[in-house]
Image (cartoon, rainbow, N blue to C red; front, side, top):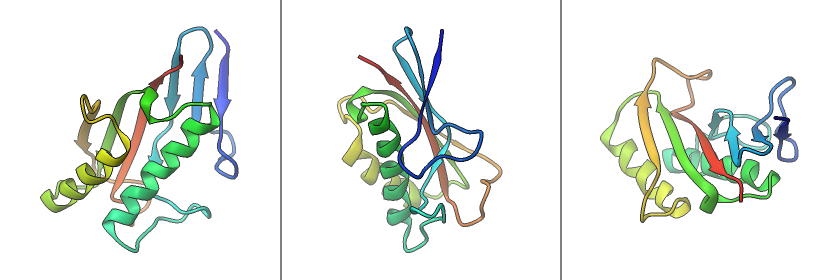
Length: 129
């Protein structure tokens, strides 16, 4: 099965694809995405701004493969730490992007992310029609 990389304009890291379509399988997978700006720097203006940037980055990767959030079958979010206020913000932002009839999501707390300013990382699986 050929693997087809998907990278939004300006988002490619050397040697890493932001997304990957598995030809013939109907699956699209992303790498971990974070709430960064166009220069790759963490968005730190507010928690909500960072979570919105995360979802906008995921949206751009999906779009680079001709997909959008209606194709998402699962999203996994990795938090820097558990905080009820953060979770409220995350859920509110997530509801703007994902189907609320069946939000396909799981959350885990991990020891840390690659930059201390980041609060969350997420990856997703989408279904290619």
